[in-house]
Length: 597
Image 1 (spheres, rainbow, N blue to C red):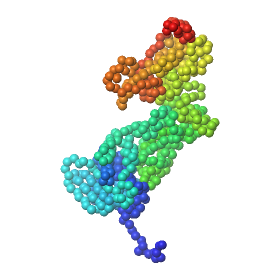
Image 2 (image 1 turned 180 degrees about the horizontal axis):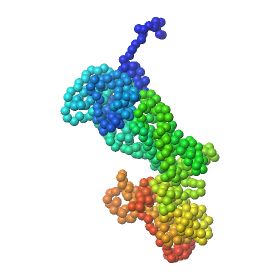
Image 3 (image 1 turned 120 degrees about the horizontal axis):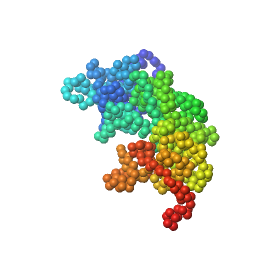
C-alpha cells in the first residue's frame, strides 16, 4: 500500500542507464535473449557501409563465454571530446538525428539509444577504436566506466571500431543470441551491399561469409522453390539520396497467399508498413486499369494472389513503430513521387510485354471465376492449366518469330518462363489427342489440329496462303522418349498433309531434345549423342536424365530449345512419297510389312 505522504522528496531522477536497466523492454523489446543488443551494434557498422566507408563487417559470437563482438573497418568513432564514452553512456547522443545528419545521409540508427542500451544491459562492455593513428580502449563494467586509454598507433589497424560485450544475466532469460535471426539480418545486408562489402559471422571459430545479390535473395527467400514465374520485374526510383526499389513477380502453382519482404536502410521490416500499402495500391491501380482496358474480369485484391515481392528503401527519416523497428510508419504520401515513377515504369513494361501482361490477366480472371462459381479455388491461379479466351496459344510480338509446338502444359509453362516474348510463341497441345492419319477431312475435325492451323494462320486447302504464315519457323518440340517421338511423327504428318508448302519452303523443324545432360553447380550442358554421354561419364561429370521436357527447368529449356548457339533444330524435308507414308501410318498391315511380320 502506498504511503500517505507524497512530497518532493519522493521524486527521483534516474540516470540514463538506470532507466534502461529498470525498463529494458521499453528500449529493446524482447528480453528473452540479447539478440537486439547485437543488432544495435550491427546497425552502426552497417550504417558505415551504407555511407560508403566500411568494406568489412564481422560479428563474432563466443557461446561458451557468452561474449559478442561487432567489428567494422569504417571511419571509426571519433576519439576527441571523449566521444566513445558519451555515445555509450548518454541517451540521445549520436550523429544521425533528423535535421542534423552531416555524418550519415541514410542510416538505420536514429534515436541515440542503441549503444547506451548495449552498455546498460551488459556486465562488461568495451569500445575499441583505431582512428587518426591512435588506438583507444574504453572498458565499462555494469555500465560504469572503469578504464580508458588512448595511445599513438603506427601501422595498419586490424579494424576501425569494435563493440564487445557480455550480456548481463540479470536482464535476459538466455545469454545466447538468436543466430538464425542474426543470419537473416546479415543476409539482408549482404543482398544490398555485396558488391562492396564482406559480411562475416564467426560463431565459436566457425566462419560464414555472406555475399549475394538482391536477385539471389528474392529467389531464395520470396519464391516458392521451383514453381513457375509469369515474369520478374525490377523497378527502381531514386530521389537522391532516397530510393524505393522493388523486385516482384507472380508465381503459378504456388501458395496463393502473397509473400512480401522488405527492408528499410538495410534493416528488415518484418511487419510491413506504409511502404507496403503504397506498393499494393500501385499494383491494384495498374492491373485494374489494364484489365478494364482489355476486357478481363478483375477485382483489385486479385493482384495479391501468388504475388512475391521484395522491397528495399533508403530513407533519410524513416519512422518506425517503436525501438525494435519492425514496422514502418512514415505517411503514405511520403512515397507519392516514388509510386508515380514506378507506375510509369510499369506502363512501359506493359507496352513491351503485352503477351505476358495478358497471360497474367487471364490467370486473375480464372481465379475470380473460380471464386464466383464455386466459392473456393479449385482451378484458379495455382492451376497449371493454360487457358485464354480463344486459344491455348501464347503468342509473340514479331511476325518473324518462331512457333514452338509442345506436348503438355508442364513443358509449355516452363517454356513461357524462359522465352523471349518478341520472337518465341508457344502452343501446348495434348499429344494423345492428335489423331492418327486417316483422311484430311477427319483430321480437320480434331480440336488440337484446329488450334494448330489457327495459330499458324495460313488456312488450308483452297484457302491456303503461305504469305499469311504468322511465323518464320514452326518447331515441334516433344520428349526424347518413344512416346515423344510418336507424337512428333503425328504432328509432322498432320502438317505434311494439311500444310505441305510449309515443309517445302523449309519452315518446319523438329527440335532435338536430350535424354542426358551434364548438370553441375555452374555447368549445364545437354548431351545429344551416345558418344557425348559416354565421354561425359568417363570424365566423371555429374549427369542428369530427363524423361521429358517438363523435367527441365526454364534456364535449362532455354539452352536446349531456344538458344541458337546451343539448340539442335532438325529441318524436315518434304518427301515425294507422302501417300506411302500416309498408308504406313494409317494401316496396321503396312506396319507389319515394314517390320517383317
